Image 1 (cartoon, rainbow, N blue to C red):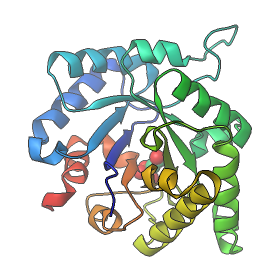
Image 2 (image 1 turned 135 degrees about the horizontal axis):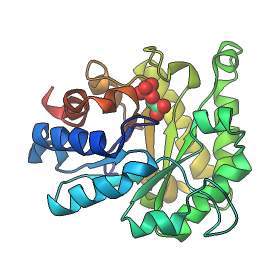
Image 3 (image 1 turned 180 degrees about the horizontal axis):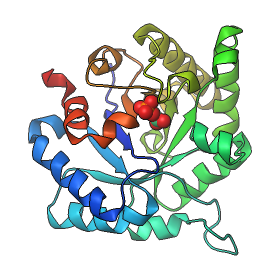
Length: 258
Ligand code: PGA
C-alpha cells in the first residue's frame, strides 16, 4: 500500500581514495542495468576526499546514482577544524547525507541532540538526511532494543519536520550486526521498522509516517537482500562492506532479479 521509493545506499566508510573510487563507480555502472535502478534510488557515500571525483563521473556519464556523504557539521561555516558543512556538500550535488551512524556515535561521542542538529542542517541545506539508530548487543540481550531505538528516534529527529516525509530517511542498524556477518532476521528488521513507523505516526501523524523511508543496515549481502526487502516496512538498505564490491552491490541493487 505504499508509494515509498526504495533506497539502496552504499556506505563506503573510510575506504577507497579518489582514484579507487572512480574505478569502483565505473565497475558498478558496468554491472547495473537500467531495470535495476528503475523505480528505486541508489546512493554511494564515498569519503569526503572522493566526492568531487565521483560527482564528476556521475555527471559526465549520466549515471543513475545519487551522490551521498557520510557525515556533516550542523553549522554552515565556522571554526571547526576537520569538519565539512552542508552547503559545501550541496555545492557538490550531494543528495543524501548519513547522520548519527553508530561508528560516529561510538568513536566521536555523537549524541541524539547533535544528530538531530545535523539532520535539521541537512534538510535546511536541501539534502536528505539518513538518520541512523540501532541498539547494541547488551541492550538487545536485555530485551530493551525497541525502547532504546525508539528513544533514539525521538531524540535524533527532534525538530526534524520536512514538508515532504520522503525527505527524511531512518536507518535501523543494530550495532551487533554491523560488519559482523550477523544479520537481524527479516522478522526482527520488520518488527523494528514497524515500531519506528508507529512512533513516527504518534509524533507526526499517520500520513507523515507512511511517507518516511525506513532502511535496514547490518551485514546486508546478496544472499540476504531479498528476504529483507520483502518486509513491508523495510524500504531499503544501508550497505557497508558489500558496497565495496561492485559485483555484490550491483546484485543487491538488482535484488528483484535474484
Ligand atoms: P555492514 O555495515 O554492511 O558492513 O555491516 C553497515 C553500515 O555500517 O552501514
